[in-house]
Amino acid sequence: MDYVVVSILQLIFSILKVYEIKWSYDDEITKLTIISFLQSATWITSTAIGVGGVLEGDVWMAVLYVVFGGLGKVVAVTIFKDKK
Image (cartoon, rainbow, N blue to C red; front, side, top):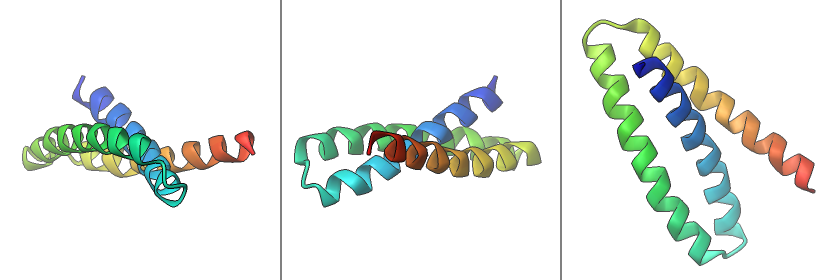
């Protein structure tokens, strides 16, 4: 179950990170503030679960953390391309 939670949260975190950068350039203060809260919540939760797993010797947790973090950026950039 922790694998699924970390994977989803890392995916969401990376998508939010891309939107944060976009909206900061667009001066979307309200959206930027809301996304900052969501981003912090997803980051702290996925990191806490991920680090806990790694400290217990679970290498797959670290792999999922990194892979889904990267996939989130790919998904977000793809969404941007489609909306242009």
